[in-house]
Image 1 (cartoon, rainbow, N blue to C red):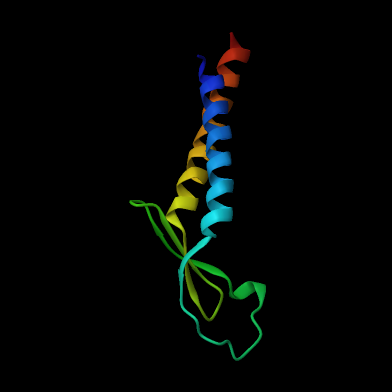
Image 2: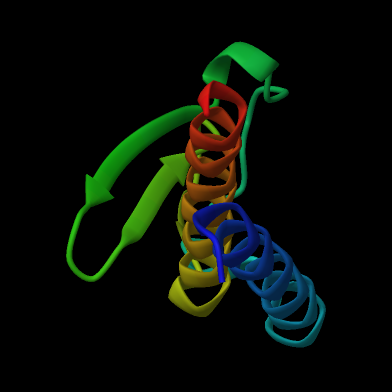
Length: 96
C-alpha cells in the first residue's frame, strides 16, 4: 500500500470515528457554568491551554472555561495526520 493510500485511509477512518464520537459524546468534556453578565462577543473566545499528552484543548468564552472531549480530539488529529501523509504521498508520486 502506498503512502498516499495509507494517508487517505487514515484520513477517512479518523473522520468517520470523529463524526461518530462528536455526535455520541458531544464536543465538550467539562465546563464551568457561570452566568455572563454582559453579552459574549466573538472576541471574548480564546484558547487558554493546549496539552500535548494526552491531547487536551481548553478554551474560554469570556465567562466559562471549557475542555474539549479527548475522544473527539484524537480522531480529528488522526485525520489531520492522514491528510498530511496523503499529501506527501501525492508529492512523491508526482515527482517520479
